[in-house]
Image: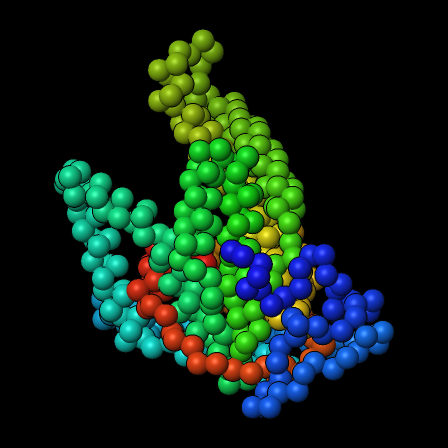
Length: 403
């Protein structure tokens, strides 16, 4: 994507939100009004920086009532109510997220989403049927179609999400192109699939850069000041955690299985491999090792998500006059995610509302926005809501494209 279309300052520009920065320059968001004045000449004057902390006011008890109704109606209607459930959920979380005295809104049309859900669901059902019946002549073209359309679906989903997100009566927008999506979510994913850990952090970088640079609010455009190197540090840290997790899983499985064998006499001395693989001791070892590795792999992946989120938030800005920041700990988010998962497993899913509210409160409580202009001074422009098909696909196929 050419930097010429980005209104935000480049990495070589003075930092307009830093006390040493000078002026708003051509990157400033235009104030509202038909005869918007030119940015004032404040050369040599330190701009006034205002910090706004985000807050989340939802409660687990309140959300539980919404969640249980959504689950019941989705089950009763055999999934037809799912788009309404998703929209109501987002409206709840957006509506309880506050910035500078104003909450966010989510204005998606559930009926439009339903059409996309039905189409994606029908294609997925057809693929499942073809796979079970070993109809490879049908299953393989569907896989190829999904791979070919994946970047396009991401692009349309980002457009849809942004256009239906509103703050201060002004909707966000997404200006990334389909071609850039095929680079970030097509070529980058292929490279990551071929080269593994050597290219995966680069793919993360390309995708986050695409998301931030394409974001718009009014006439302000997003700019990403980050670099690819921190993503490699995050990836290597995650790899180290995974390797250590594998070793710990094997040792823990061996200890538990050995203790069981010693106490039960399950394995006799001199037992052959057939006796070993058919024994209770072996299955205890395999089960403990698998669960331990799965837990530690989850820790590593949650660290990637938390560290990436924090880095992106600390390097994203809008129009050169609004910058986000994050102070939450990625390791704190890891602990929260693990304990949330355990609570949901123990309660058979009933703790899901509590876990969702707890996560939102933790993340949003550690996010802030710094500005050198009033947030009311962004001039709006009409935005099309994008394609509900892309949003439906991202929901049903678990494509991670959230801002």
